[in-house]
Image (cartoon, rainbow, N blue to C red; front, side, top):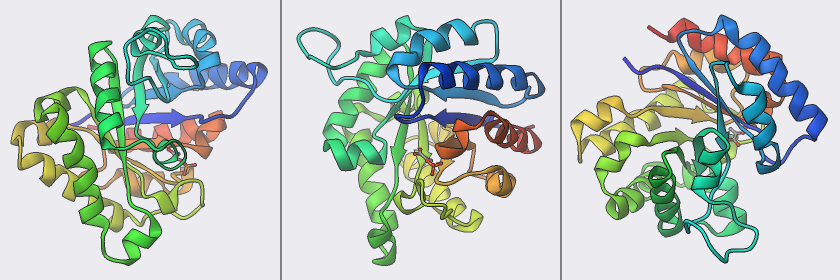
Length: 254
Ligand code: PEP
């Protein structure tokens, strides 16, 4: 049985004051969550705050991106070891916003996954199709390309230390959500793709769903066989909503 992971992706939102309040709110409510793992992926400037406020709690800290290089003259970049230094457990890699706005592709994402693992972090690899691709019947081909493009570069064994998030691009921040059946079908496809290379890793790898997951739809999504948690954008900016999703995860956990 895979333990559910509910991870918040704050994106580029908040201020020092709001980050402080949100971190405190999540920690205060996290006591009721014992069967799921909780994480918050905060903007870089709030990592120190996160490290301070999450200490002693079960809530884990994550970054939203890292550099393809491990250190040196790369102005404006942040390395995996820096994230680890601030107590991060997780780092999001290949989010669709980074693919779309910053030109990330399988080659750069594979490097980021490698740097993350070398730094002792667990990357959360995001994959997902656009609405045009779904409507053209290309969902599985797109996802296969995104998964294989990384597996072929870093090897299947690396997936023993990677979480995957299926995030249909058309559902991110739009209020549209994949139905539980649509999401389950893609999650099962991803797992089968991994299983072609390693049945044991496919059994263990967690595949999170992301795309307008909210307290009202979380339970149904999280109840699906191959959905092992959620990557939560908008709803993670409100402690009560985020915790309600974590509690929904509790119902489905063993
Ligand atoms: C995300 O960006 O990872 C995400 C899932 O966003 P939202 O929940 O707002 O759709």
